[in-house]
Image 1 (cartoon, rainbow, N blue to C red):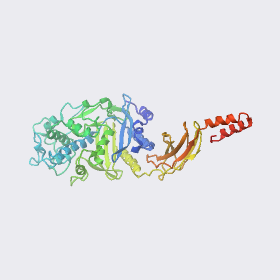
Image 2 (cartoon, helix red, strand yellow):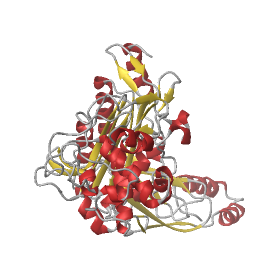
Image 3 (cartoon, helix red, strand yellow):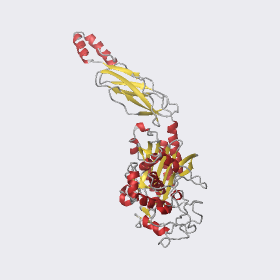
Image 4 (cartoon, one colour):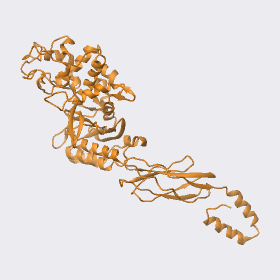
Length: 511
């Protein structure tokens, strides 16, 4: 726990973990000009008391940005990395729903089937006993099952009560946690909606019954493995706890750790993963069910899940929600738990996807809006024009430095970086930034004789690259043998030797 003054100092010391962003290849359009977005996020973290944050952006199937900031564990002085795991709370529901839709695609059930056809116990609304509860109702929160928070238990550590056992005791008359008045809504099944964690936990139990696999095994084999989410898990016992961000509460003066909390309704909110891994899951939806050329869901299934399903609520699909962020219509889900918030959204019109995970307790829409804005700038961004043909010496000597220059402009007036190809299989680093139209000066030394074609390429601060310039040719002739012969000839003529020395000192030509 740290006092607020100490916390501010820590943020200034940490500022930002850039390791991962610098490792992203240029071909993926990584954002090199990221000061504004870093400053915005850090300001939000300081003003809203967010201990740690990890976020990622995708456009289509390309990850174009990752950011990691602050502390995963204050007490252990551990900073957030892109690989840090966070609890994603109710965003977990999208994974559970996806697993069920895979079983529907396999022909093992239909969306409108009564769930009691697949259970070993019957789930009946006490006020409407003749109404069937369907899978569609569970996935649209219209089943009439209600969260009774008196019995929605949570623990420090994994829940000691298996969610399968809990559900039967909660939903069946005579069960230890059954309450006909408070475990169900008063409205008729399928005629209204009410958000329910218990209903989604029941989806997880049905996945087990239909697939004949443990819920965690099913999601691991059919989702996490093909989506490269190999460090994701529903239970703390299956994860490296030291890599999980500690949940915190800001009490007005200091951060109070909650500990790692497990709920009894595991499939509805207990998944822990990283922003990078969760972005893989989102990319699969952005790309209509495909990830790395693997079909995880049929595109028709994805379309159905992202289509409003209820005449009385046009914002909900199948678990996925439609919402508005910064004026744009997006699909996704949010998550909220003690000391944890998560947001996963994408815009179908631009194929931009955003994931934000924190170990604090504030809303994330303003940060999401900023990340969407940033990605839209990339989409609308134009690369710099092809640089001018380099200027400089056309002939020279080996092991001597020569200066060259070029310049170009950017239609968006972005800052520009240059990379030089020296014609000997050697490239410069990206040099810059330079203002649009500002001349780039650099130098190089060749160590072998020959003819070299110099080229230069530009890119703007968002990573958009120009074409290579026209080549500029420089020749490195052999000088030493001619020089020795000339010295031999002029040995008897001191005045000629003086003239030769002056000439070779100020000329790039060889004799």
